[in-house]
Length: 89
Image 1: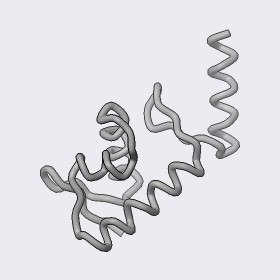
Image 2: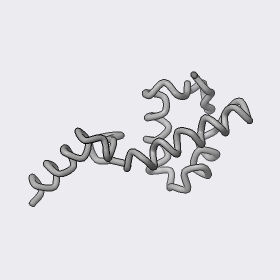
Image 3: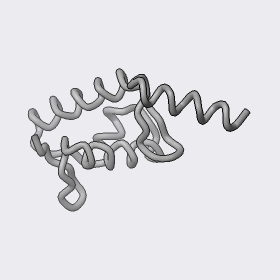
Image 4: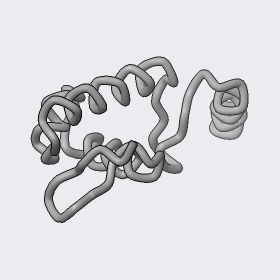
């Protein structure tokens, strides 16, 4: 059953329905796309964003917010500068 679930998740990633943020964390592509747009909008309006502000935008716990922040950096949307993130675009 565990292998079957992995195969299903891999297929959903290949088809673009979900995106992996880590080996144990996946998000629906449409939700991650929306979140990325919200972060860009926030940063254009405010210039920078702290992790607690990102947590507020995501509505998720810090356990998920930190990997999302790392994803935004890796996707070249944001740039981490100390305790804040700035728009990289």
